[in-house]
Amino acid sequence: MAEVVEAKQVGVPIPNGGVPIFGVGEDLHHLNKGPDGAFAEFETVSGEGTGFQDAIRCRIAGELPEKAWYTQVSTQSKIDLKEGDTVLISFWARTIATKAEDGMGDFLLFFGVPAAKDTPEGEVVKETFMERQKVGKAWKQFLLPRRVPADYPAGSTRMNLDFGYARQTIDFAGIQVHRFTGKKPADLPTTE
Image (cartoon, rainbow, N blue to C red):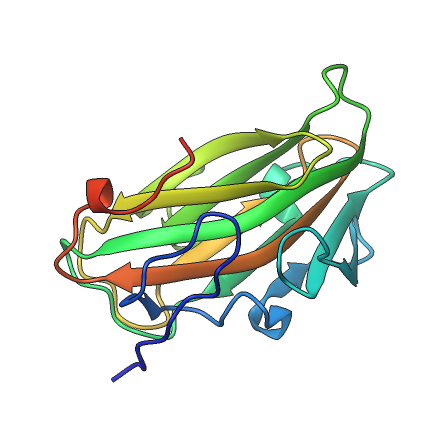
C-alpha cells in the first residue's frame, strides 16, 4: 500500500491525506522527457518562486513536431486507481519565451490511459482529463481535481504535458498527482 504523505505547503496547499500516484513534486527524476534533441531540449533550472528547488525547462526553438505530443514531459502511475477515486493534479508553470502573439505559452495536459498503438488516430482510451492550457511569464500554480472514471491498474495511467504547439520555452515545477479516496472534486482546491 502506498504511503500517505503530507503535501508541501506551497501556494495553495494540497490537502493532507492524499496518496501520490507518481513521484513527489520535488523529485523530477520520475519524469520522462522526450524526445530530447529531435524537436525539444530539456534542462533542469531553478524552481525559485514555486517552493520547489528545481524546475524542468522545455524548449522548442526550431522545427515544430508533426504532433504536439511528440514533445512532452510525462510520468506513469505507481499505484492502482479505482473508479470514483478523485485525483488532484498539481503543478506550476511559466513561459520563458514564445513566438505566440499573445505572449502565452501553450500546452496540453493529458491524464488518463493513452490509446494503444493499434487504436485509430485521435482516439483516446479511458481518458480522464485532456485540456489545453495557457500560461504567462509569471509562475502559475495549477490545481485540477478530477474524478477517475474507471479502474486503472498501476502503470497504466499517464500524465503528459505536451508542449509542441509553438516555438516556445516553458518551465514546469512541482509536478504531482495525489489520489483522494472518499472525496469529491468539489472537496479539493482548484485554480479553474
